[in-house]
Amino acid sequence: MPYGKNHFRLARSVRLLEALGNPQTKVPTIHIAGTKGKGSTAALLSATLTASGYRVGLFTSPHLTHLEERIAINGQPCSPEQLVQLTWAVREVVQVLDEAEDGFWATFFEILTAMGFLHFAQQEVDIAIVEVGLGGRLDSTNVCQPLITAITSISFDHMQQLGSTLSAIAREKAGILKPGIPCVSGVMAPEAAKAIAEIAEERKCPLWELGKHFTCHYHAPSKEHPQALATVDFQGRWLPAQNMETIPLGLLGGHQARNAAVAWAILKLLEEQGWAIPATAQKTGFSQVRWPARIEVVQHHPTVILDSAHNAASVRALWQTLEACFPPVKRTLVFATTKGKDVQGMLQFLLPRFDRIVLTQYLSNPRSLPVEDLHAIALEQNLSKEQIAGIECYEDPHQAWNTVMQTSSADDLICITGSLFLAAELRPSLLACRQVESA
Image (tube, rainbow, N blue to C red; front, side, top):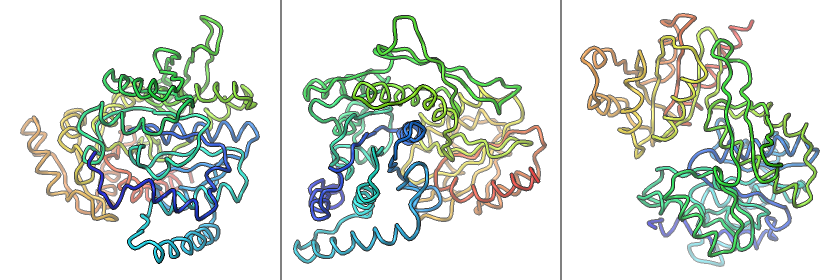
C-alpha cells in the first residue's frame, strides 16, 4: 500500500510508547476501525460502559472544536491543563528519541496517540475505547492489546493510502485483528467482508458478522415527531431463538442502527468476558448518546441538520435518513468539501435531491476545495438549466449560512454537510441561533 515512508511507521509508535513505559498495556482496550461509523460506535460503547459504572477512556479523531475532545474519560474531554501536562511528558521523550535516533520525527497523530494512552493509564480507567485514525495496519493506535476488535464499515475513502478496491481497503483495516482475539464486523459489502474473513481465519480470530451472527431492524421516529427517539430491534446468538432486544437510539439513521448493532455485539462479548453491563445501562447509553455533526439536529423552525458526510457512501446514508425521518418540505443544501475527496460522486447524488443548492468553502484548513472549483464540478452534473442558474456560491461559509437563514421559512429543512471542517466552523453560529430560538 502506498503509505508515505516517513508518515506510517508502526515501529516508531512502539519505540515512543516503550520510552513512556508502555501505558497501552495497562488498560483493557476495545479497538475500532472502519471507513465510517467508528466514532459513533465508540461513543455508544463509552456511554453504555459509563452508565454501567465503569471509568471509560475514549480516544477519537478528528476533533470538532478543541483538541482535548480527542482524549475523554466518561464523556468529558481532558482539561487544557491535563493536555499541557501530557504534551510536556511526551515532548521530553520525543526529544530524547530525536537525539538518539537521527530522523525519528514522530508525527502529530503518533504523539497524540501516546498522550491518549498515557492519560488513560495515569487516570486508571477501567477500559479504553480506541478509534483508529486512518486505515488500521500501520495506524499508530495499532500497538494496543485489545479485548475485542471491530470494523464498522468499508467504503471508498483515503484510497491513495489504503488502496483502490474494497478488498484492499478492508485488508488494511483488518490489520488491527490480533491472533485469537474476537472481532465484530459490521461490513456488508461482500468483497470487503470476504477479505476480513480471510484475515480472521489466518489469525484464528473468532469473527462475529452483522447479517450472519446478529441483526438489527431500525424504526425511524415519526416524521410528524422527528424529535422523538428511533428504536432498534437486535437479534443474535446471545439471545434465545426468535427473541429480540428493543433499545431506543439517540442517533438518527439506519446506518447508525448498524453502528449500534456492532456496539451491541461488542457489549455481549464483554459480558461473556465477565463485564457487568445491566440492560438499563445499555438503554441509557444508547438513548442518551450524542455525537456532534453526525446528522445532528441543531435547530427547529427551520430544521437545521449538521453533518460531516464526506464520501459517496456517507452522503447516501445522510439522504436516506432525511427521507426516513423528516417530512417532505423544501430542502436546502449547504455544501463544502475537501480536496481529494470524491466530489463528483457526492454532488452527482446530492444536487438533484435538493430544492436549493448553496456552495461554499471552509476557511480553517488549506485542504479546503475552493468554491469556484466546487462550482465547476457542480456544473458538470446532469442538472436542468433552472437548477444550474439557481446555484449560489459564497467564499465565506458564515455568509452562506446567514443568507440561507434569512431567506428560509420556518417549515424548511437546511442540511449542512460535506466536511467535518465545515461543521466545525459553522457549529458555534448554529448553536448561537438555537439559543436565540429557545430564549
